[in-house]
Image (cartoon, rainbow, N blue to C red):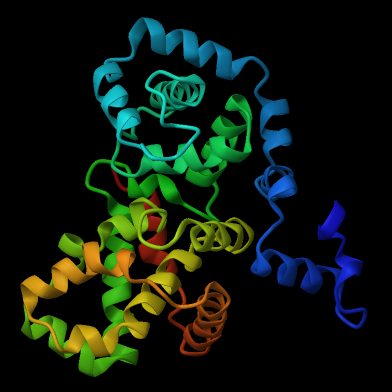
Length: 296
């Protein structure tokens, strides 16, 4: 696997640890798609479902009632990215096809749900159309990621993650937690997009890719941990602001002024993961996660 050869790092580390370290440094672009396919077990999922993707696309053409709304979502997905800039270009058409097919595959999820088109577009930057579809299925269905709850009606997983992040902040950053509470700041109104778009629109894109490399490798805790990192690193600025200015900072200013070195952010992410694991609050309680995954 080229630069991802485990033996290319420290000889004293196990291959698993070496591979993890390589992913945290950022998977090389030329092999990112191959690695994501392996980590998401895309080939096995495809082999279990021969011809299903083409069948779903045909069903969508005949029966999908979300065409117009999916088309609007496609139009506003990475509009400045070279691959998606051309209206009805090859990648925009692929994005539409995958979203429409998934709307038929999983009617519980709204095919044009906020943020879902960004996730699919990211996959399409590195994978072919059918591979991107099955990668999406894995991200949505596999309990390691459990992303479908972010896009179901009522967004049960989103609600659970936001509540959990609030719990983390009150426990580990109590001064900030009290300030946000005093100002009446609700995470659901300000940072929901962090989770539904997987930070793709909140940090510089090269950093977002590294976050996704780690997310696909490690799983759901990466999103809530990254939310904690974003608040922790910017707590001094947030403590100086009132409610309206906090909302603007979290929704607009943060992604414009994120000037920390990518390596430093990833180190903070890994350190925060260990900190939260030690405090036994890396993820919401298992019962809440199960409820969020199954609740409609």
